Image (cartoon, rainbow, N blue to C red; front, side):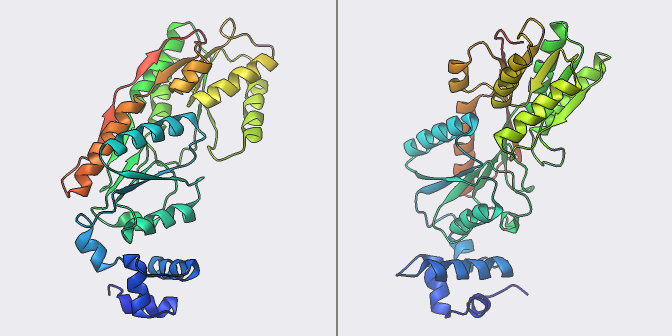
Length: 325
């Protein structure tokens, strides 16, 4: 049976009026009371009827952006482009660094479901958050698969993987290592790995992927890459899954006495403006960040107006030929 407002009030140990005030963001309420009501709603999987009826009519003109951390150049640049585009469309922006914390992400979803924000653009990698299972939510995902209803905006990860790997092979490399996130991560970015493996096999070469969890500290990541050089001293080229890792690998290669590009080729992925300014010589796959932001905004507007959207939007990438690869 579908839970009712009375059930939420009973579980949260508050009155129905208090639950209603929380849902409509009216009157003074302590943060403890608000969180208790949210917690009860989550436990009961309760979606307020008022929200369902008014999801596309009652607007706050606030859009939430939820990313792992805007300290990452890709997410930082993407957030800036989204904020600029949303402002032009008349929206205010609330930026949340989830730090891949599912509780933090669920809190932002609570804000959406109780109409404190009109919509969300999400690029985090938490899975199993049940609030995403509601249909027709005004949510757009970037490089993340959440459910069949929520549209995903992404660069052409597979072609990016092909471009990077083919380029290294054409430069004469045979022992090529690829660094990527965990296999179980449900994200279109894993197509970079698939493209690398397919391209290597088609060329008669043996693929080797080093798994690197995005959430680990910098020091642990450095240990993994340092060990990679110890375990594979004959490595000729590395295709890193992002530019930050590529920069770290270049630093470690230098410490190991390897010269880039003389005896080690490196290709990154993302191609943000800040990285190209700081490391103009880095060969990398460039994601169309401005186009990703614009597409995300347009698709979110369609969701806000209850219009049909596609499941997936794939945007083209390009190869920036620097001097490292």
